[in-house]
Length: 258
Image (tube, rainbow, N blue to C red; front, side, top):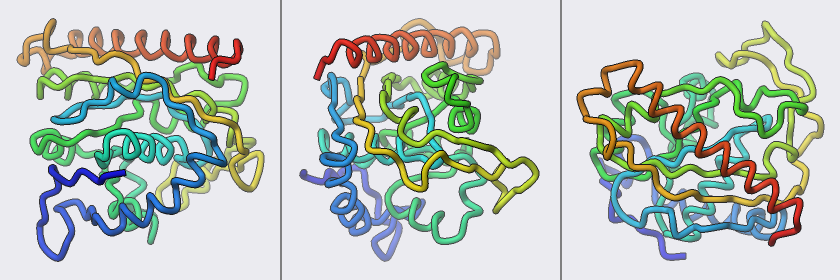
């Protein structure tokens, strides 16, 4: 793996403005690589769709007690392109001591409009999970059924004229589902206390299916980024493309496609 730091902007002392540290990326990769290859046995399908240069948004389904799927995607992009993926996290993540610093060091960014705009203007590759908390909180019976679909990714793609690459993550929704949600226990601002089915993620094989880039800019003028109905239409297009990719991935897994 050759780490591509062409988009890294040192804001002083080896960190970028969001706290990314190239040294931390290398250390995290050294820890995650054996898990990626041997524990989750990740197989990548059509990784050539990951942009090697320039700004873009990866949009993926979301599940699991903790964001293991995000870590797997981060490692997979690093392995195939050398690029440091910038996952966009829910705002409450910033309230977790130590975790917030660790996440920042490896590229995770709090999901404010200003942060995401800065990343795209700087030519970064970002990841958004439009299901958000509703994805990780879904009951096991709802696995691979997309939950509440936030539309911010479509607004960003239209406004900044960047492509969206759908990513179907197959395996995460069985690996570490939630057994019970305890409402009213808001640890560091989290909406609930999750109780997983097992103390650690199960070693379910992961399959990452990268879809062809979706160029919303070809069909939507930049001005319609302020039109809620147009943004919803664009977001539905991404939703349907990801849903089709998930179903295709599930069929391939059932058929034993490696």
